[in-house]
Length: 320
Image (cartoon, rainbow, N blue to C red; front, side, top):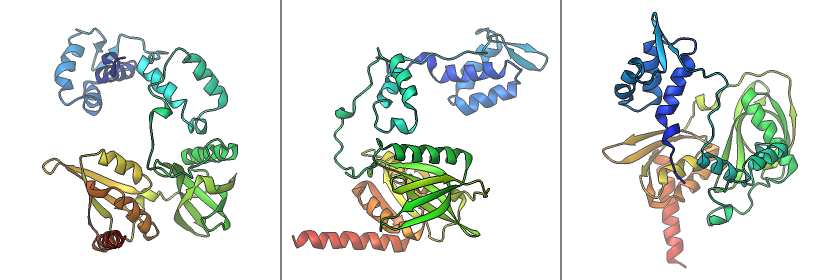
């Protein structure tokens, strides 16, 4: 099986975008913008002469615009074998029914009956994952997830009955805006704003702890959490380009706002994590779990806590 299909590569995507927009007319400037945004750095040098000289015979010029010679109406690109195999793999995931219905599953399985998945769940041995992950087979959990997912798209307020870690029940209006998955915890969490009187506060809910959801018709304005001003200085991490550290960091800290840059000379990534004080201990534990592939550069108070934790662990190891 070929891993990449040249037919449906970058050039195909760019040209199809140009032809689709050229059905109603497109200027040379707009073509340049599509190329610079979606293609490689030197793509214009190779592609523009072929387009404008009619070597490819795809477009024609009328006055100051270019028009497509190809009818793209109703065109649907067929899937490659690799793409079909990937879909077949996704269908075997325990979380799949959070996103599709049983009828959709049956239709997809029927269409892909002659396709083998890329891999099976049993091909992997996960050794560092919590054993109390979410119950994705539970129907009430699935319904809660789908309601929240829809609310994230529409910003519909929800009245949620929630059980916290101390087994206390509460009823609060929330406006969800993002769902995050923790691979390590095997849990979904929803980032939202809690409506408390005239105030809106950041909240992170475990979907498994939600007991009941009702839609609320009262409109509220959503102050996006990613635009929030944090009282604490961001945690600054230096991430080495080894042991898949960057990808692991992005997954591990998906629930928090981040800014990540790459220093080409140092061959290091630098990541700033913005957080609330209540999340400090959780972040501390997760960062320590990365070992030597991550270095904490600041802030000073957080760095001192890291040093204290490591010192306590060294003493504990010496005494055992």
